Length: 386
Image 1: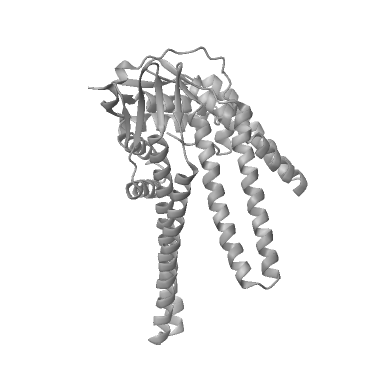
Image 2 (image 1 turned 45 degrees about the vertical axis):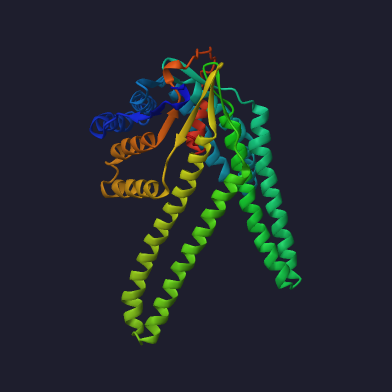
């Protein structure tokens, strides 16, 4: 049997009850120490999830130390405080800080990827990230600027057409602007994923991926069309409900006191569910696509392939039920949610190839600072691929 035909399901063996003990201690000690212990909490959590994830009997490991995380976290907290204080002084300073943040964002994501990879190993071989900072700015910053400038120009042209009173030109301009925004987002995402996927290394072995903008366009376009269709149905139902109430002569007091509140609550949950479904669809389709395009070299031996089989419906239900569980339990279901999500994602991930034949050796890394990792986490930025 060729090694490329061996299918290895990713397994997650963590248990909610077991992790709850770690989680509750982390929470209590973080509160008692005014957040200082949170660095130890992060390391314990990552080591638990990494250590319980395996492929072909081999496990992942997380190597960052609490002191590394604590130093990076203190720097991140300092940046957040400085940002908050300076942003309140006047609008000009706030605008300058916002521009500065976008200017350093490529460096932040690049540095974050390098640290995360350097602190992760599988079968005693560490990962690394070899993408250049120059390419990070060309891909992340350059493409983003092109998309923003192009969209602004399209909006300006559309506005001029509208001011001139041309309904046809205005319609074409609006449709063109929306199409440009959709294509621009797809082009940006394609470049971002291609940059990161081709920069990852496992020992001396290289990951590679050839992603196409057209595939991202299909995903976003389909999501937009489905979303538009659902919105039209929602508004049509609401319209005919109001029209029906008027037709059957419902009393205004009855309508405003009973029907209207019920419709508002119903609409709220419908829109919430709508958001979950669309978000889950896009996330699942993108993950499935990029995994199908990714390979790992193995010298002169066959390359390894990857497969993701997330479904939009099950993933949407996972996100929604996780949120609901945490609300109902006032956050106590958090460990169960984390374990459940890790088990679900692992069960939908496959490595194709004989892992026992993987020939890789760790290379030395001089990356020690977790500052970028903590700053990225503080500002909630990052590239979610796994």
